[in-house]
Image 1 (cartoon, rainbow, N blue to C red):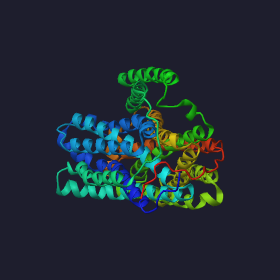
Image 2 (image 1 turned 90 degrees about the vertical axis):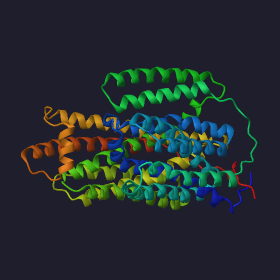
Image 3 (image 1 turned 180 degrees about the horizontal axis):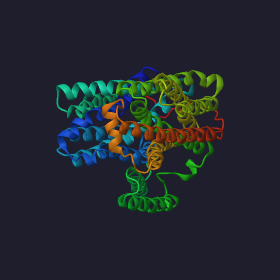
Image 4 (image 1 turned 180 degrees about the vertical axis):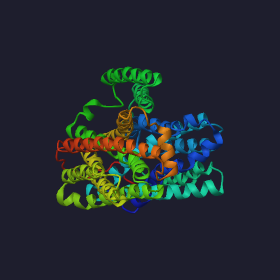
Length: 487
């Protein structure tokens, strides 16, 4: 196919960035607003499910929409994804209870499951490998900007308007993005309309849902039942995919060495980075005795390091190759993680911030290299599925990492004979510096438990590096674009 006209590509890219911005800012702005929302709607015991339901739906549907983008085209899947996401956003604003909000967040998550992988696929269609790394850096910056803007905008909305606008602010952004895709994205390569593997899609969704529910509340009767049900659905899914004419998850695609090794690397890196974002703020506030603002700084530098690393990697692809950039990122991730096992009660938050920055740089190099490697390993007709497999692996790694590392923290707390529970930790976080003997005991117990957790983060980072060594060198494919915009 001829190269796409460059006049329309920036307009399509703007639509991609707008659609991804909706998902990115949703992660931070909802976190800021949820205490006030829960205060009005009640059911605080269901608080975490507002976030878990979104991640569950997004993770479960990523592979389905990636496959549909290959069989039915990128544009219709993106338009449907944006439409579903906006529908969920409108309904969230009208939620009358926490259970209804959880249900509507599921709808939002389904839309996000289409937007994230297909957006990256569109970029892979329109830009050459030399250009794609730079564009991926821009996309990474969307997440960095949203991490800063989300809490600020959320605070303003909560202070001056109804919390419903936390969700309704997506409507104009989504409509502009949809209009851009409708007007400027042209797909001209003939495609065979293939049957949709509905049974496989349903079984995959149920398998992932079972795993997510099991990891959200490990040890409970519900989690055990969900785990068993998820395993049963996973086995049924594998059986279905072997017999389906056009499976949702092509096992032969996943077993290709570049894709298998890149996805495994991304999965473990996702586990490592969720450990950083979940437990470093707790350490800075409860152990170092610093404010929430300082704890936020130690994570903000990671968020800025990520797009910076992706941008530098983009410029290095042509000179050093994809594999070299991925390996550099895989080295930086454990290098930054070493910092956290060296933290102590007297450490400076600047030291923690330095480690966070290094891990962010590493994730920037690693994530952008991995996504380009899997895209360059396949042709147009499989690019949607391969891109979705990489996004799915990273999301699954985050979900598993949160559960596994949370279990490590619980093991550390259990070593103190049950003298410390989460109520003690919340009280310590609320009151800041410790002034009593009880607070000192809680601080010491938490320091030891988090130290054990940081060792687990380091071990996960080292596994990431070892898996990255198995990723082969991938030669860029010839310039083939199936979703080229027409003049």
